[in-house]
Length: 184
Image (tube, rainbow, N blue to C red; front, side, top):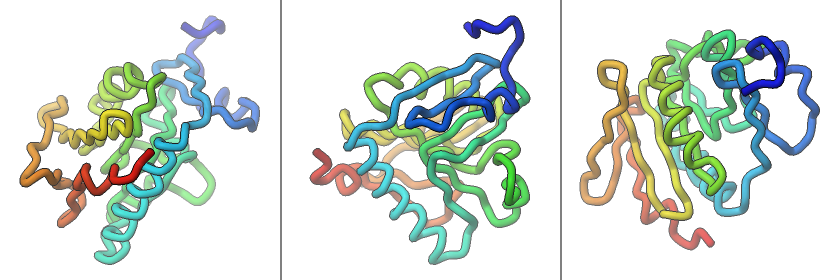
C-alpha cells in the first residue's frame, strides 16, 4: 500500500530518481524492483533477437525493450521486459511519451523476487487492459508460457514439438530449449 493518501499516477512516476531500480505503478501503488540478474539479461537479449529479427524481416511492427513506460490506466504504469506493437497500432507510442494503452504482446522475464508480481498481479493487469498475448519467461525453470487473451482471461498456448507459436506475430515460434541453451 502506498504511503500517500492517494493513488499514484504517471506524473508521480516521473519524479522517481534516475537510478538502477525499475519503478512501476500498479493500481496506484509504487512497485520498486532491483536491476535484473545475468540469466534474466541473457534471456532478454535472446528474446529481443528472436522477436525483433522476425518482426523486422516481415515488417510487422516494432519491438521495444525495458525501460519503456506503458500507461495502462491513470494508476497503472509498467515497464515490461519486452513489448511488441503491430504497425497499425504504432500510434499508441508517440515520440515523447509513454506507450498509451495495451501493446499487442508483452514479455516479462521472471526473477526469484518477481514470481507473484509477474504471474499474478501483472497477468491480471495485462488481461484487464487488453494485452492480446503475454509471455512469462522463467530462466531458472527454463520455461516459457505463452498466454493468449480469450474472453478477458489468459489461456495457455499448447506447444507443438516443443515449440510455442505466437498468435499475434504471424510465423513466430519460440523453442525454450534453444532459448535457454547455455544460459548459466
